[in-house]
Image (cartoon, rainbow, N blue to C red):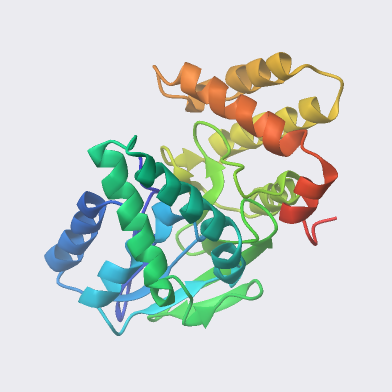
Length: 282
């Protein structure tokens, strides 16, 4: 962190890059890796549209303009809704003069990404789950509708036993800002049914199958608690207990605040708010 995890997959025709991060230092590491390997980046796969996973698209495409972008079409709804609203709030924050130099730089970088929205849109839309051959490498690109976002893409490489989950799995706490929690639960069921041995989350350390199942168990318990008569305090404490292995030392208070925020704004939000993010998830 704070950028989402990026993953390079080597393919016969070049490098496949899964997610491109947000910050210049992250971008520079990606470009340096490709240069050191002596192979071009021929494809980008965006697991979802959150800017900590996609802001680097424009810079990667500037360096490798022939690269295809594989992603869901959820970016269009995000640009018209969540990202537009977020930009308005960020511009007001900048105008207030309260933003630190670091905050202002990050906001402006995000705005630059939105101004170059074509770099965020797929050249090869992922509209259904299925087998793909990308740059000569066989992969399964799976579409999870109405989960962490309106359309999350997760990747499974059967030959390598590797699954790249994006923010469907996030070490310290599930990021529910744009989430449909029940649709997300279904996506985790699909991942659990996949015979992977290694899983790369959207943030945090690489997991084996048992670690993923423990994280999924913590996620399900958090949702179940919110659906019960349990108090917010009890549900947040349950997440901290069940997901303790995935919460870095020193982040406990921050995780409690985030889990409490998502409890209020997603897990026990009103019907209108749930419909906004769960439009077709039941």
